[in-house]
Amino acid sequence: MMREAGIFAAGAAGALWLVRQSVRQGARAARQQRGLYSAADVSQVEPPLVLHGEVVKGFGRGGKLLGCPTANIDEKAVGNALESFGTGVYFGWAKLDGQVYKMVTSIGWNPYFKNDKKTVEPHILHDFKGDFYGKMLSIVVCAKIRPELNFDSMEALVEAIDNDKAIAVKALDDKRYEPLKAKLS
Ligand SMILES: Cc1cc2nc3c(=O)[nH]c(=O)nc-3n(C[C@H](O)[C@H](O)[C@H](O)COP(=O)(O)O)c2cc1C
Image (cartoon, rainbow, N blue to C red; front, side):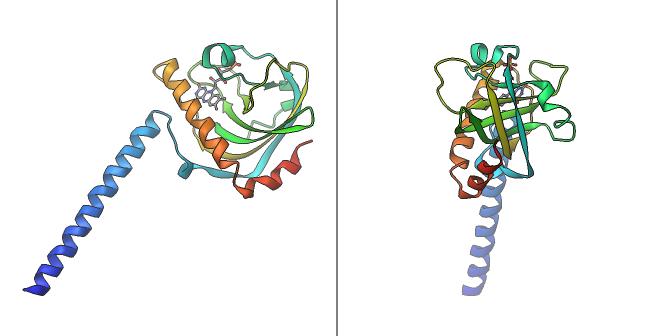
């Protein structure tokens, strides 16, 4: 009798664990559908992508519409470096005027805006007072957060970008990304 009760309790605990696990997975999938990924989704890029070039004007939507100004690197300097690099949202380091900053970037076609060119759009995680068009920028792309996505609204895109920024700021404190700063020119 005692033994049967024990088997029943173990079975119930296992079933409860399975239910909890599937609820957690469902919640994670629902958040990912909204572009809201987490630190657990981050995967390091091997080898890291290093780019260096002049900052040029993009469409100008980043700062005005999204509250997220991006420092677009001159496409001549980028050359064909993006061709074989997977699209997505990444983080890494950026160097500007001799200073190294945390950065988050999208690489791809911006499906929400339906761009016809694959671009890299780094957002430097620092509150700059002015813009820096014409300056030289180096970036090293260290890890991927999520795929590039389309969204139902601008608010949903902004929410996902804000979440990306929070993941990047925290993840870049991990010692494993520190040596990659040496790749910046
Ligand atoms: C961290 C980050 C994540 C982004 N994620 C997406 C995305 O999932 N889908 C998308 O269409 N655009 C995404 N973008 C691209 C923005 O739409 C783009 O940077 C914005 O349109 C500014 O471009 P512009 O300055 O050339 O106008 C992302 C940009 C950043 C910085």
